[in-house]
Length: 188
Length: 181
Image (tube, rainbow over all chains, first blue to last red; front, side, top):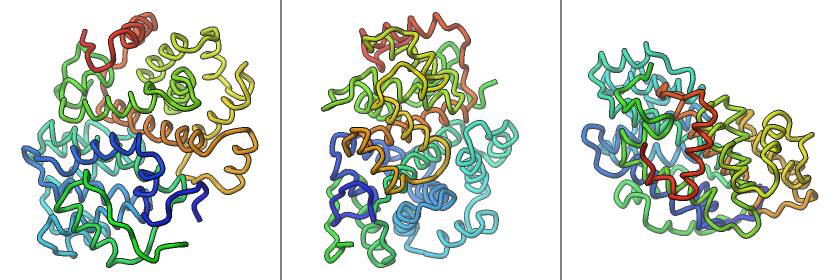
């Protein structure tokens, strides 16, 4: 049960956004820029995979599920890509470059100072550019913030996979700046 | 040595903002919202103190120097407070409310634990509103992000303490994003 009085028709971070719209706007603008806006080389699906993976490492159920659903919809609606990345990125059907970027993301998640020159060199050897390395670091750092925010205030994190799929489809299509839909029958 | 090619005459996060302006404006707006915009009950100085404290716990030299310099310019109490807080907030000459806010921030920084019901009850007893509890936690969360961002790309973090003081005076006068030097 959430510790602080939160609107209970909106799961996860959505309830925190409804509780505090003043900070919702910049938080949404940031995730919109990081994950949804056009990028010179990383697709929205690839960036969502980084966010999903970091959320998994942080064991944030809401964030992992919603971004996994968005990633799936961004990547031709193939669930196996997300599933395999979450089990083991090294054997997932993704590019070597993305595997190297996910390694950097994991290092960021374990602590910013844990990223080494070797990690960066590995990513460069797989063709990663400075912008891709920078953006991977920022996505990972930002998702540590979002994950802690959601978990730290014990928001409601549903288990309904169909719900995440529906929310994910909306976000994949619209981005992060449109209002959420209410979740019917959600009182807990 | 910095891991990516970023302008090396700009310290800390400034160099990353120059390198990637697309995300810089969102990050800057977030900081302004969290720390500088009007707040029903928390002053800018109190919020900067939370940011400085978390940055100190994360040993992010650039961030705790910058925000540690910002706080005394905005707090009406003396600048020695900052040193006390960064050493041990529970014995610093600050209000019990401020100590409670810093305890929330420290808890967020220390691990991935969520606030328990007992924690929330304690903070409410110390006089914190739900908005204050939630905002202290969000500032701490955000500064874990900023600290991590600065560290993970091995940005240049100067040692010159006076430099930070000058930078902060100018930020307060002219606004953060507009500054380039």
